[in-house]
Image 1 (tube, one colour):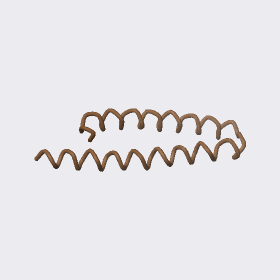
Image 2: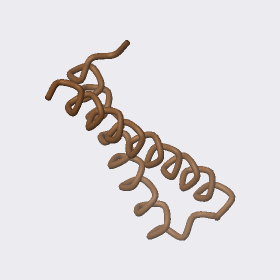
Image 3: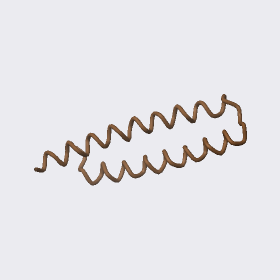
Image 4: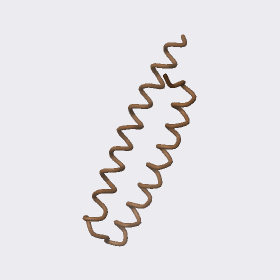
Length: 67
């Protein structure tokens, strides 16, 4: 069972990856790079966002357990 702190640390890592991926996508799109390259990155970013939201829910649940 994960602690709230370990979940929060994992959340920070995922958010950093999400931000970096977003920046990379923006640069590639500005350089008119093919969608064949950009689209998989967008899907990866979307998956990270899903994981982030799931972790946020888990963290809230953990915090509510402690009350």
